[in-house]
Length: 277
Image 1: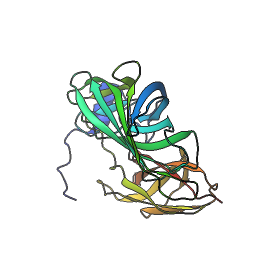
Image 2: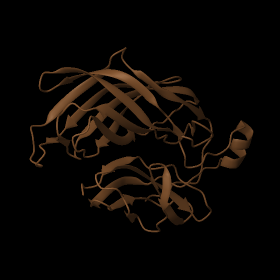
Image 3: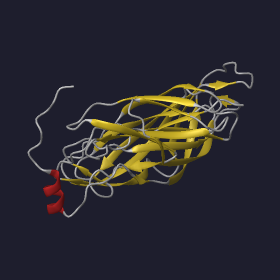
Protein backbone atom coordinates (compact mmCIF):
# COMPACT_ATOMS: atom_id res chain seq x y z
CA UNK A 1 0.00 0.00 0.00
CA UNK A 2 1.33 3.42 -0.90
CA UNK A 3 1.85 5.51 2.24
CA UNK A 4 0.51 9.04 2.08
CA UNK A 5 2.00 11.93 3.97
CA UNK A 6 0.60 12.09 7.49
CA UNK A 7 -1.93 14.92 7.83
CA UNK A 8 -0.54 17.96 9.57
CA UNK A 9 -3.82 18.56 11.35
CA UNK A 10 -3.86 16.79 14.71
CA UNK A 11 -7.27 15.27 15.22
CA UNK A 12 -7.38 15.65 19.01
CA UNK A 13 -6.82 19.40 18.78
CA UNK A 14 -9.31 19.73 15.95
CA UNK A 15 -11.94 17.82 17.88
CA UNK A 16 -11.40 19.94 20.97
CA UNK A 17 -11.81 23.13 18.95
CA UNK A 18 -14.97 21.90 17.27
CA UNK A 19 -16.54 20.66 20.50
CA UNK A 20 -17.05 17.06 19.38
CA UNK A 21 -15.37 13.82 20.35
CA UNK A 22 -13.97 10.99 18.29
CA UNK A 23 -16.46 8.20 17.79
CA UNK A 24 -15.99 4.53 18.53
CA UNK A 25 -16.37 1.79 15.96
CA UNK A 26 -20.13 1.83 16.52
CA UNK A 27 -22.52 3.50 14.10
CA UNK A 28 -25.84 5.16 14.85
CA UNK A 29 -28.55 2.66 14.00
CA UNK A 30 -31.28 3.46 11.49
CA UNK A 31 -34.77 1.99 11.30
CA UNK A 32 -36.94 3.01 8.35
CA UNK A 33 -40.14 1.24 7.28
CA UNK A 34 -41.76 2.13 3.96
CA UNK A 35 -44.02 0.85 1.19
CA UNK A 36 -42.64 0.12 -2.27
CA UNK A 37 -44.14 -1.08 -5.55
CA UNK A 38 -42.20 -3.73 -7.45
CA UNK A 39 -42.43 -4.53 -11.15
CA UNK A 40 -40.97 -7.97 -11.88
CA UNK A 41 -39.49 -9.56 -14.99
CA UNK A 42 -42.48 -11.93 -14.96
CA UNK A 43 -44.82 -9.00 -15.62
CA UNK A 44 -46.25 -8.66 -12.11
CA UNK A 45 -46.76 -5.41 -10.22
CA UNK A 46 -46.59 -6.13 -6.50
CA UNK A 47 -46.88 -3.77 -3.49
CA UNK A 48 -44.37 -4.78 -0.80
CA UNK A 49 -43.26 -3.72 2.63
CA UNK A 50 -39.63 -2.62 2.98
CA UNK A 51 -37.47 -2.17 6.07
CA UNK A 52 -34.10 -0.40 5.87
CA UNK A 53 -31.69 -0.88 8.75
CA UNK A 54 -27.96 -0.50 9.20
CA UNK A 55 -26.08 2.47 10.56
CA UNK A 56 -24.91 6.02 9.86
CA UNK A 57 -21.21 6.72 10.53
CA UNK A 58 -20.02 7.88 13.97
CA UNK A 59 -16.51 8.75 12.87
CA UNK A 60 -16.51 12.17 14.57
CA UNK A 61 -19.23 12.35 17.22
CA UNK A 62 -22.72 10.98 16.61
CA UNK A 63 -23.50 10.86 12.88
CA UNK A 64 -20.36 12.95 12.29
CA UNK A 65 -17.64 12.49 9.67
CA UNK A 66 -14.57 14.26 8.32
CA UNK A 67 -15.13 16.33 5.20
CA UNK A 68 -11.81 15.07 3.76
CA UNK A 69 -12.23 11.33 4.34
CA UNK A 70 -14.56 8.63 3.06
CA UNK A 71 -17.78 8.16 5.02
CA UNK A 72 -19.48 4.75 4.99
CA UNK A 73 -23.20 4.09 5.48
CA UNK A 74 -24.14 0.53 6.40
CA UNK A 75 -27.37 -0.67 4.87
CA UNK A 76 -29.58 -3.67 5.66
CA UNK A 77 -32.67 -4.50 3.66
CA UNK A 78 -35.68 -6.61 4.64
CA UNK A 79 -38.25 -6.91 1.87
CA UNK A 80 -41.30 -9.09 1.31
CA UNK A 81 -40.37 -12.05 -0.88
CA UNK A 82 -41.40 -11.93 -4.54
CA UNK A 83 -40.79 -15.64 -5.16
CA UNK A 84 -42.01 -18.94 -3.76
CA UNK A 85 -39.65 -21.46 -2.29
CA UNK A 86 -35.97 -20.92 -1.56
CA UNK A 87 -33.73 -18.02 -2.59
CA UNK A 88 -30.07 -18.65 -3.29
CA UNK A 89 -27.31 -16.71 -1.54
CA UNK A 90 -26.04 -15.20 -4.80
CA UNK A 91 -29.17 -13.03 -5.06
CA UNK A 92 -28.34 -9.30 -4.95
CA UNK A 93 -29.88 -5.86 -4.65
CA UNK A 94 -28.76 -2.39 -5.76
CA UNK A 95 -30.24 0.63 -3.97
CA UNK A 96 -30.17 4.09 -5.55
CA UNK A 97 -29.11 6.73 -3.01
CA UNK A 98 -28.09 10.36 -2.85
CA UNK A 99 -27.48 13.18 -0.41
CA UNK A 100 -28.99 16.64 -0.19
CA UNK A 101 -27.20 19.51 1.54
CA UNK A 102 -24.16 21.64 0.67
CA UNK A 103 -23.62 19.41 -2.38
CA UNK A 104 -25.56 16.53 -3.98
CA UNK A 105 -23.72 13.21 -3.96
CA UNK A 106 -25.23 10.33 -5.93
CA UNK A 107 -24.19 6.77 -5.02
CA UNK A 108 -25.49 3.21 -4.93
CA UNK A 109 -25.86 0.63 -2.22
CA UNK A 110 -24.74 -2.91 -3.05
CA UNK A 111 -26.29 -5.69 -0.96
CA UNK A 112 -26.28 -9.48 -0.95
CA UNK A 113 -29.18 -11.62 0.20
CA UNK A 114 -28.88 -14.48 2.63
CA UNK A 115 -30.09 -17.83 1.35
CA UNK A 116 -33.62 -18.49 2.61
CA UNK A 117 -35.79 -21.56 3.08
CA UNK A 118 -39.29 -20.55 1.89
CA UNK A 119 -39.77 -17.52 4.18
CA UNK A 120 -42.06 -14.51 3.62
CA UNK A 121 -39.17 -12.02 3.95
CA UNK A 122 -35.81 -11.69 2.24
CA UNK A 123 -32.83 -10.29 4.15
CA UNK A 124 -29.81 -8.53 2.63
CA UNK A 125 -26.86 -6.54 3.95
CA UNK A 126 -24.13 -4.33 2.53
CA UNK A 127 -23.56 -0.60 2.33
CA UNK A 128 -23.51 2.52 0.20
CA UNK A 129 -20.53 3.45 -1.91
CA UNK A 130 -18.02 5.67 -0.09
CA UNK A 131 -19.28 9.22 0.42
CA UNK A 132 -17.00 12.26 0.44
CA UNK A 133 -19.09 14.96 2.12
CA UNK A 134 -17.14 18.03 1.06
CA UNK A 135 -17.81 20.91 1.71
CA UNK A 136 -18.56 20.55 5.40
CA UNK A 137 -22.16 20.84 6.53
CA UNK A 138 -25.29 18.79 7.15
CA UNK A 139 -26.25 16.18 4.56
CA UNK A 140 -29.47 14.20 4.38
CA UNK A 141 -29.21 10.65 3.02
CA UNK A 142 -32.12 9.55 0.82
CA UNK A 143 -32.88 6.12 -0.68
CA UNK A 144 -34.74 5.59 -3.93
CA UNK A 145 -35.39 2.63 -6.21
CA UNK A 146 -34.28 -0.91 -5.33
CA UNK A 147 -33.29 -3.24 -8.17
CA UNK A 148 -33.16 -6.92 -7.24
CA UNK A 149 -31.75 -9.96 -9.00
CA UNK A 150 -33.23 -13.04 -7.32
CA UNK A 151 -32.15 -16.64 -7.88
CA UNK A 152 -34.97 -18.89 -6.60
CA UNK A 153 -34.73 -22.63 -6.06
CA UNK A 154 -37.30 -25.39 -5.74
CA UNK A 155 -37.67 -27.28 -2.46
CA UNK A 156 -35.37 -30.01 -3.81
CA UNK A 157 -32.61 -27.46 -4.48
CA UNK A 158 -32.96 -27.34 -8.25
CA UNK A 159 -32.65 -23.91 -9.89
CA UNK A 160 -35.78 -22.06 -11.01
CA UNK A 161 -35.85 -19.23 -13.60
CA UNK A 162 -34.33 -16.04 -12.18
CA UNK A 163 -36.57 -13.15 -11.24
CA UNK A 164 -35.51 -9.52 -11.59
CA UNK A 165 -37.47 -6.66 -10.07
CA UNK A 166 -37.34 -2.89 -9.83
CA UNK A 167 -39.05 -1.49 -6.76
CA UNK A 168 -39.87 2.21 -6.24
CA UNK A 169 -41.17 4.10 -3.19
CA UNK A 170 -44.96 4.20 -3.17
CA UNK A 171 -45.14 7.69 -1.68
CA UNK A 172 -42.64 9.61 -3.83
CA UNK A 173 -39.17 9.33 -5.31
CA UNK A 174 -37.30 8.51 -2.09
CA UNK A 175 -37.32 7.83 1.64
CA UNK A 176 -35.09 9.56 4.21
CA UNK A 177 -32.51 7.32 5.89
CA UNK A 178 -31.04 10.00 8.17
CA UNK A 179 -28.64 12.94 8.38
CA UNK A 180 -24.84 13.17 8.60
CA UNK A 181 -22.83 16.14 9.86
CA UNK A 182 -19.57 16.73 7.96
CA UNK A 183 -16.85 18.57 9.91
CA UNK A 184 -13.82 20.44 8.60
CA UNK A 185 -11.23 18.18 10.26
CA UNK A 186 -9.42 14.89 9.75
CA UNK A 187 -10.07 11.87 11.98
CA UNK A 188 -7.09 9.56 12.49
CA UNK A 189 -8.02 5.89 12.92
CA UNK A 190 -7.20 2.50 11.39
CA UNK A 191 -8.63 1.70 7.98
CA UNK A 192 -11.77 -0.39 8.09
CA UNK A 193 -11.66 -4.01 6.85
CA UNK A 194 -13.16 -4.85 3.46
CA UNK A 195 -14.14 -7.81 1.25
CA UNK A 196 -15.80 -9.68 4.13
CA UNK A 197 -16.96 -13.08 2.87
CA UNK A 198 -18.21 -16.47 4.06
CA UNK A 199 -15.91 -19.13 2.60
CA UNK A 200 -17.73 -22.14 4.07
CA UNK A 201 -20.75 -22.86 6.24
CA UNK A 202 -22.37 -25.89 7.86
CA UNK A 203 -25.48 -26.19 10.01
CA UNK A 204 -23.61 -24.92 13.10
CA UNK A 205 -20.39 -23.26 11.86
CA UNK A 206 -19.23 -20.60 9.40
CA UNK A 207 -15.76 -19.49 8.32
CA UNK A 208 -15.28 -15.80 7.52
CA UNK A 209 -12.39 -14.08 5.77
CA UNK A 210 -11.68 -10.42 5.05
CA UNK A 211 -9.00 -8.03 3.82
CA UNK A 212 -7.38 -5.22 5.80
CA UNK A 213 -4.42 -2.87 5.45
CA UNK A 214 -2.15 -1.44 8.12
CA UNK A 215 -2.61 2.17 9.23
CA UNK A 216 0.06 4.18 11.09
CA UNK A 217 0.26 1.69 13.95
CA UNK A 218 0.46 -2.12 13.75
CA UNK A 219 -2.76 -4.09 13.97
CA UNK A 220 -3.28 -5.81 17.32
CA UNK A 221 -6.35 -7.88 16.44
CA UNK A 222 -9.76 -7.79 14.79
CA UNK A 223 -13.17 -7.67 16.45
CA UNK A 224 -15.84 -9.85 14.85
CA UNK A 225 -19.42 -8.71 15.43
CA UNK A 226 -22.34 -11.10 15.04
CA UNK A 227 -25.71 -9.38 15.32
CA UNK A 228 -23.97 -6.33 16.88
CA UNK A 229 -22.16 -8.37 19.59
CA UNK A 230 -18.39 -9.00 19.63
CA UNK A 231 -17.92 -12.79 19.54
CA UNK A 232 -14.24 -13.16 18.59
CA UNK A 233 -10.95 -11.25 18.50
CA UNK A 234 -8.68 -13.06 16.03
CA UNK A 235 -5.23 -11.81 15.10
CA UNK A 236 -5.53 -13.27 11.60
CA UNK A 237 -7.89 -12.11 8.86
CA UNK A 238 -10.22 -15.06 9.29
CA UNK A 239 -12.33 -16.74 11.93
CA UNK A 240 -14.53 -19.81 12.26
CA UNK A 241 -17.76 -19.22 14.17
CA UNK A 242 -19.15 -22.20 16.07
CA UNK A 243 -22.33 -22.94 18.01
CA UNK A 244 -24.61 -21.44 15.35
CA UNK A 245 -28.22 -22.49 14.90
CA UNK A 246 -29.13 -24.65 11.87
CA UNK A 247 -31.01 -22.74 9.15
CA UNK A 248 -30.29 -19.49 11.02
CA UNK A 249 -29.48 -16.06 9.65
CA UNK A 250 -26.62 -13.91 10.98
CA UNK A 251 -25.34 -10.40 10.28
CA UNK A 252 -21.58 -9.98 10.67
CA UNK A 253 -19.11 -7.08 10.60
CA UNK A 254 -15.42 -6.72 11.43
CA UNK A 255 -13.36 -3.96 13.09
CA UNK A 256 -9.58 -3.44 13.08
CA UNK A 257 -8.02 -2.59 16.46
CA UNK A 258 -4.41 -1.27 16.47
CA UNK A 259 -1.75 -1.48 19.18
CA UNK A 260 -2.76 1.91 20.65
CA UNK A 261 -6.35 0.71 21.14
CA UNK A 262 -7.78 2.81 18.30
CA UNK A 263 -10.56 1.12 16.33
CA UNK A 264 -11.56 1.38 12.72
CA UNK A 265 -15.10 1.85 11.57
CA UNK A 266 -17.00 -1.39 11.09
CA UNK A 267 -16.69 -3.14 7.75
CA UNK A 268 -19.66 -3.26 5.44
CA UNK A 269 -22.15 -5.77 6.81
CA UNK A 270 -22.69 -9.28 5.49
CA UNK A 271 -25.71 -11.49 6.10
CA UNK A 272 -25.53 -15.26 5.69
CA UNK A 273 -27.48 -18.41 6.47
CA UNK A 274 -26.36 -21.68 8.00
CA UNK A 275 -27.31 -24.98 6.42
CA UNK A 276 -30.49 -26.79 7.52
CA UNK A 277 -30.03 -29.58 10.07
